[in-house]
Amino acid sequence: MLESGLDVLIRQTQLFIDGQWVSAQSGKTFCTINPSNEEVIARVAEGDAADVELAVLAARRAFDEGPWPCMDARERGKIMHRFCDLIEAEMDDLAAIESLDNGKPIKDARSVDIPLAIECIRYYAGWADKIQGSTIPVNGDFLCYTRREPVGVAGQI
Image (cartoon, rainbow, N blue to C red):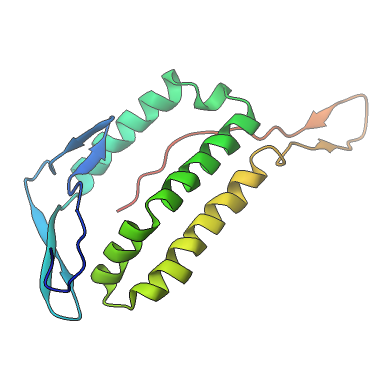
């Protein structure tokens, strides 16, 4: 139990790359601190450009070889909704962690932060089967159209 009185199990502090929890390539970690009392919540893997490169390569491979780009848009939306269901199932723990990490009232995390994140993801999940290409009018005996499809991977630090 943390000094704050909140009993939260920090399940993972490593990076999730290529389907596995791994330490940062550099071996570095950083402390995440509760700003309200300066208590260390956890030591977290400190990813850098080398880790992003590994993650992007793994994600690109999964994208090229996996089911996502060929998956029906409705199925992609269902997966995103399922992700939200999982967040909702862990709402109390996630709100406690968010509260500790930001030094904010747990009520705010539970009633605002986590629900807004869920709402945002559900919004985009709802668009998954509604974003379509267009037929563009052009002169002559031509057909011009756009097709929207997943194109790849982005890595951010």
